[in-house]
Length: 443
Image 1: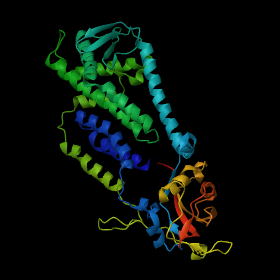
Image 2: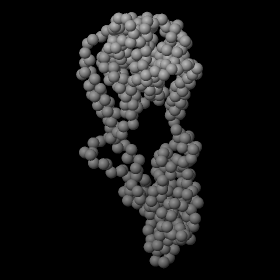
Image 3: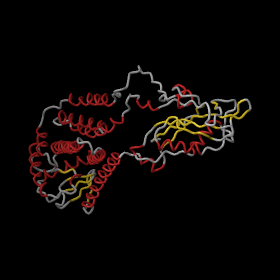
Image 4: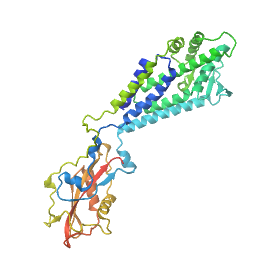
């Protein structure tokens, strides 16, 4: 979330400080639409930190031997992952649930506003126009547009030339697809609800849409006036804008938030832009490049404890050393000798070797159902002996992860069937095994 706030704050500062006063409205529109995408993507960028390798352990016997573990035949690593709806969702932190619920509320609110707009306008009679549908509102809604429909307030006192300008303004909204911009950014507002900079971004886009439509309407009606009378200009258009803005307070509010209305607020800003003639300072548009580059550098900084390795991947560290006093299983409790490796290793009936042993344990082990705060990833080492009769005896946790995890492993080992015993010199003997069991919360 911090990366998202950082990215969107940088975008807002750049827009407010450098771009808002420029007449590069098309550029500003694209900038505002892409800003949430960049902000949401920054936290997802891969970092060059190698800390995630710390949990990795070398497979099989070599890694365990390197850790100084005592004599034991090490089977392949067994992996246990959280499964099932309850186990999968039990580990979701409460803040994630809060975030998801807030996103759902935001998207639901957007759908509700769309439904209100549909109910308010579905009974209006529509006539086809050049690239749009014209619906008379009878004063119930101001002159505005949504999608490909222009809602026309025929009760407004407009001269023919003024009506042509207003219609050209709304037609520009339709032609340039501003409704889809609004829906795009409103959806991002629901997703980035925690980011305080998404809200002024929505208002900035609304202003940019009006400035684009103002410019298009003024250019169209000035170049080819469609009504008799003097040729309209920026001054006449600004006067019309100010006069119609006063009608806004007498019109119903719902569901204006999704409409592009000619009487949109920020009238003074729009009038100032109409009268502005200074050239666009293109260098300000290029400021986005160093800003984005700086954000990428910050987002991709390695973790503080990461050491440079000249591009060479670090080898996975061995498991933590385990006290040898806990591991010298040179005999069973009854005093009989224990072997680590014999001529004929114990195996399950039906063959399959070491893989069959691991699969037999895997079949009887499940990820424990725990509260989110108690869930963890990690590795357990469990040892057990197969005695000269083929029975599994004296299982013990060599390196544990937690009571629930240790109990799950011990239960699975205790359910192993009888083995075909190992033999040394043709005589059945006791053999000790160690099994690494890796628990992972996520697949």
